Image (cartoon, rainbow over all chains, first blue to last red; front, side):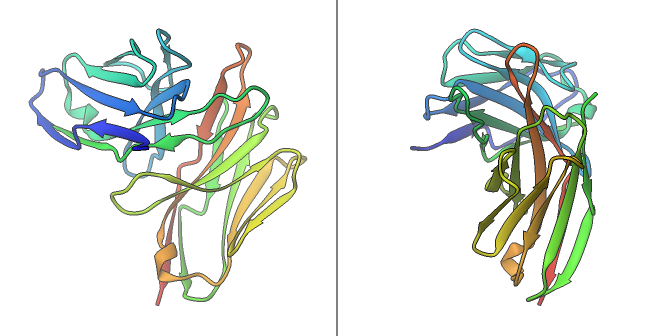
Length: 115
Length: 115
């Protein structure tokens, strides 16, 4: 199993450009998450999904959109990139076993710089 | 909103000494508490977790304790080694009104083990 795979690993954008970050997991997990990590601020939840075809807003959703058309993929889109979106983005997934908490599994991250 | 406070933000210890990181949560419905280790430039990885029906859990040099009454939990690392140097995140997990598991992360502790 590859686990959680994020592409690309690095990207530099100009202000106003758009792009999509891809997260793929091969563990048949129901839950998937997108976080951003900024120095000294820990992990902040952008959007999440509890299953195929569902998405929900997290703590810092503004400026981002997501889609979960297939269970194994969770896409994060930036429609018009802004310098404030410079960050490291982590995707995570989690198995949903009824009656039992399960840990999240993280990808390697995408380092995004907006100039 | 719900939050998790994590202290200290940085911690330096001599090799062989013990390290303790503390987290306090606000949501009394939290019933699962994972700890993640993130080495520089790498993904967060689960190192230990504890469920609310247990007061302490140990895995070799790592242990976690939970005090539900006081709503705090701690990570204990004994006989620290240079490879323990990393950022450690705690999290508190609770189900919300819709049945969705919500992860609230602490802001992280940067542990430096001095040789």
